[in-house]
Amino acid sequence: MHIKSEDFRVAAGAEVELKKWPTAVRPSYRSNREYRDKLSTHVKQLSAQQELLYASGRFALLMIFQAMDAAGKDGAIAHVMSGINPQGCRVSSFKHPSAEELKHDFL
Image (cartoon, rainbow, N blue to C red):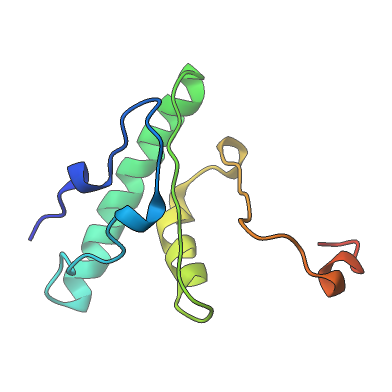
């Protein structure tokens, strides 16, 4: 199985309407072992690519994790980003902090 990356690419300067983009893809693995092997390989490749992008300072990669609460976003981010140097990353939230969140200085 192969994920077609063209389905997720946006042309430079193009306007993005998220509702027009696919939200799910079929799994590209057949077993948990195959998943772990692919994850390890892809994390190493992503780490190498991130080093090149960070060093060049010309290009960037935008990753959007969108799902309902308790849908596994944190776990997915932890797995995918496990081999990435956090110095080369910037994280942004899409929602405004609630009044309760604003009361806490650590947020």
